[in-house]
Image 1 (cartoon, rainbow, N blue to C red):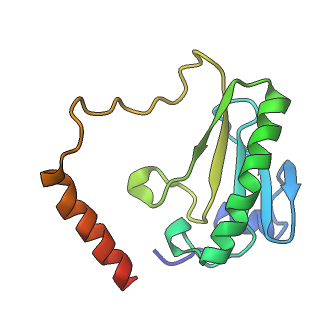
Image 2: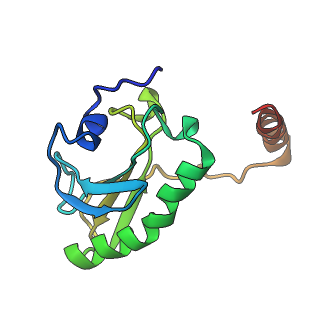
Length: 145
């Protein structure tokens, strides 16, 4: 999907839309989600534009995002009194991505809040017969990317 310069995050970066900033450096901006699922729900975006999702982002820009996540998680937990956080990153519409600019969600969690629950793992462990072809396919794809 081609990058849309009119997406909400690009507009925030250009100062066309307001946001409640919680962190900013030369490469990254973090701000409160305008439609939070929990108090303190924070979005972390690269300032670099032109990329629709994390899989398109240059590795250096992805590393800059990842570098600030631990500190932001600690700050969100401390500020909200949460027990934990989910870090959510969707890549593509089928995964739930709605704004096509790379971003991470930091969602504060409290025990029993019922917000997000990862589906239960299957009951049987992955075996070699099933795993080897998938592992080889992924390794092969990596060598071509």
